[in-house]
Length: 252
Image 1: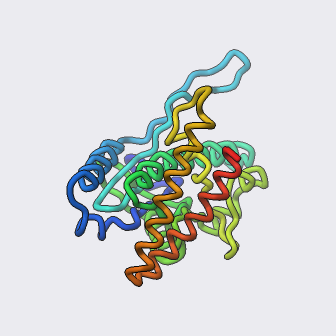
Image 2: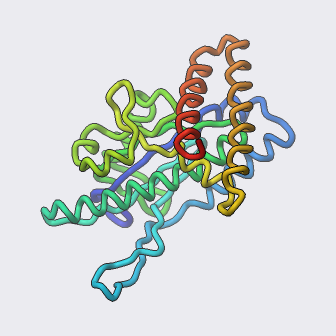
């Protein structure tokens, strides 16, 4: 929470394959990675939630931006969690908003990573955090990091069980439930919207992009298996299945 230690919705992301890329990539691909890092650093900013009241008495938000911090191959994002004063409906509304915005931001980052041959993995929780002026501190950060580094394993952004328990059935419909019983963010379908411009040619363009991405994914798995890097190949194989499911759901 910007300016003080307080409750927030926190996600911690790690760029899978980053260490190998920094050691071995040269030329154009290294340039694309550097460009991505520069763009990620530009995400650093202060939590913002602006909007205007509507004629019907509701309130429309038009500028929602999390607090962001980046360091090396890691990204931390957080949204303030206002005090709902025991109002379950109000808390559910904020959770729905943060779930939507988190999915959107992760899909933006993941689409750029996929283009240069990297994947993203992370953890998402709700907890106390101080997040301002480049400083990140608190139990929310620790739990999100622990989820990413010790539990997520595959290129997914998993929710803390304590957070999942606070979600309504409508919230959970927007998530994916994995074989191990963990909910994770469905950023896969939104990859298509981030990679392809909307319009009358969307379906054709998205199909072409998906075909190209599929070839790159298959080639990466083959390369890793040939190098006997089985654990890394397994992560890409997991992503291939998730990507295929998203493709069928998004463009058929």
